[in-house]
Length: 186
Image 1 (cartoon, rainbow, N blue to C red):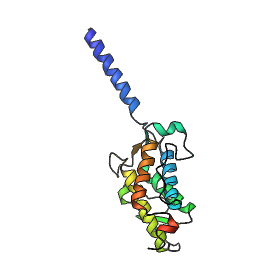
Image 2 (image 1 turned 135 degrees about the vertical axis):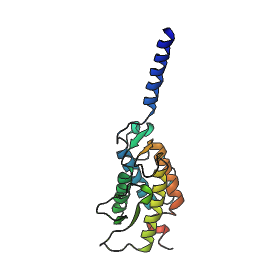
Image 3 (image 1 turned 60 degrees about the vertical axis):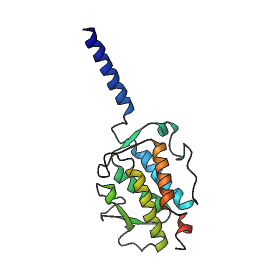
Image 4 (image 1 turned 45 degrees about the horizontal axis):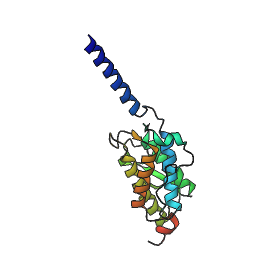
């Protein structure tokens, strides 16, 4: 009988520790994801090869949000919307393919989302369009590295630090420099 109680106690203790280590099963990380994507794209467009951000890179994030694992179950919508907003802050208007109304990609698969000129709006100059494509490639790769169930799952898990570092490193690889410098002469 004592062995059964000990085994049951150990099983409950183990189960409790596993749930503490798991990210929340809600969209608690979506606002963090949006802030980091927006800030990373904006930083890539405005700074010449920005340095790796320190642990608190997103000024709008609380320090407590940096260390714990978070989840976002709407990664495609949130990441593409934040990307769109960052570009809008830079004066660039984009649309998403497959084409749908709205400021984010409606595809359920992040690997199938492609930014481009918004239908009915003036065309972007080639250097701006090149920046859009290059920056999206970096964001897409960073986000997909945090989508353990695949890019079609819509779910990502991350710490703010791991996502910030992934965005930084991937944008360093895909973007040559600031928006109005790197692509203007190509």
